[in-house]
Image (cartoon, rainbow, N blue to C red; front, side):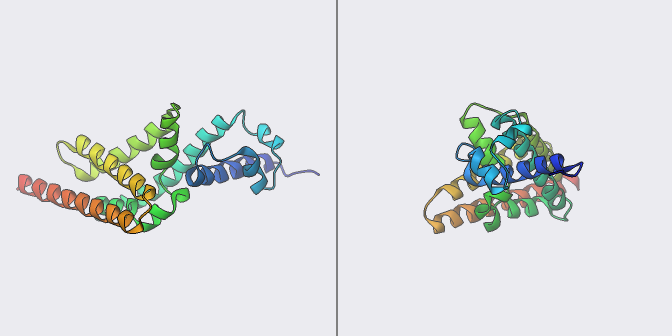
Length: 196
């Protein structure tokens, strides 16, 4: 059977997209190559026509998740109140219950770190978010504030996803969301006072 000229490239992208979803939802270690390829109606052996190893696919999938996040965050940070929009989205019920579609930091990047396989893509994802937060804050110590905020967001999401009690998960998200938004509002008010 003859395939179109760009069939291999399309198949390559399909594998990356499916892996990105499964790695974020199920974990990298828990996602086998055979079930991944079978879900796409492809053979396990065909995997090696596209990637040298699972590690190569993991990095490509992390890059794909990063690109999705960049597009989502570009929309959030273009709003009138970008930090509040970002905080609300990051600690939303949707993000809590949809790890397969969300930020790769609390899923893939966290797992890679635990395995001792740090990724330069994780640095890129984090740097992009920190720059967006710093710009939105616009304060003298925005670099430190952005790091605290991003660490708090990721930590809160990991905890909320980890607890069994749904009320506790919701409370973690709500309390951290309100606390961060209060900090943002206070910082904004202080910046306005200093500028007067």
